[in-house]
Amino acid sequence: MSQHRAGRTGSFRRHILIGTFALASLAGSGLSLAADAGKDATAQAAKHVVFAVGNPALAVDTAPYTSVPAAMNYWKGLDVKVLVTQGAIQNLQALLTGQADIANLGMSAMYSLATKHPELQVISLAAGNIWHTAVPDNSPIKTEADLKGKTIGVQTLTSASFLYGRAALVGAGLDPDKDVKWLPVGVGAAAANALKQHHIDAYASYDGPIGTIANISDTQMRVLPSVMDDQRGTLGLVTTKKYLAANHDTVVAFLRGFNAGQHFAALNPLAAVQIHWKAHPDQKPTNVDEAKAIRQALSLVETRFKVMDQPGTNGLVGYLDPPTVQKSLDFFFKNGVIEHPLKAAAVTALDVAKEAAQFDAKAVERDAKEWAK
Image (tube, rainbow, N blue to C red):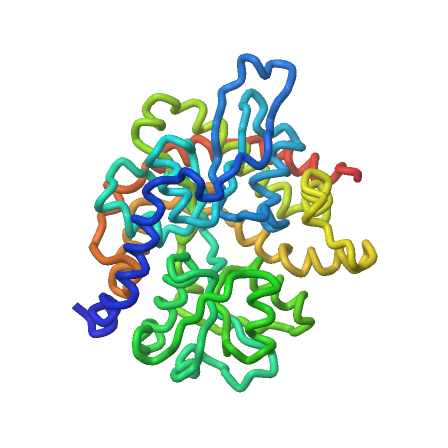
């Protein structure tokens, strides 16, 4: 057992236990069905799917897998309801209690609970990495190793961002429990203010929240190179064995619509942003003119939209072969992201991802090219 992995069994384990057991009951926890999608004239015969999304505001970076598939009818034949939660742990609890059928989340939380809940199954994995630790561009911090003695902000101490931020430090030879301080600062304005007030020196998250901080604080953020840059399968979709066995075709149809939405957004990010603002007008900035709002939004999402559309093994979007998944699992265990070793075959059901990768990409490309506001 490595020194760094052993060192994390104190405060970090307590954070995971709090996140796991405090959410055992979802009643009154703030979950809400935020949107209906994919309804058409055959709604009465549509297959119902509850999709848990760990983004309480349904910010614009969720457009490829919420508003775009709905608006473009990529979920035709399905009645998809988006269940808004506070993050990955609530998503998993929603699955385990039957309140959700499919969820998107960072794989750190999924794999951390997989040994206790073998009914959870990964059905799609992103090939690209979106998880980073960033600093203001004028910061003297140039590498992960330079973070020694610094304070790093994260959304929460049970978030995937926290776990992946820790792994990046371990990869740089630091002890994430002893060499840095962690401060939960949320997202958006709260996180930007923490950075502006110098309460934190860096912020660990994914592309969207990092870009939001940059816009709010009018500060260019610089991503630090890390071992996370080479990791595949850090974000994906999860369901349960029971749901998959009873709804195989529905799962494949959902994943095809999900993939189509991702592809559309990567090809035409401006359209994805405008579609999202139409579906969720509260997400459109009101304190700036539209041209500036669009520039800000695109700076947040353009890179991420393209990263999420990257093909995996054999050029298949959403699919990674067992050796690639196992390599990621071994990395997670070695670098303290998960407590126990796992076998890819035990926690994945990626044959459905193979099927779902066969969506009509040409039609989506035509949609993206011809789309008009």
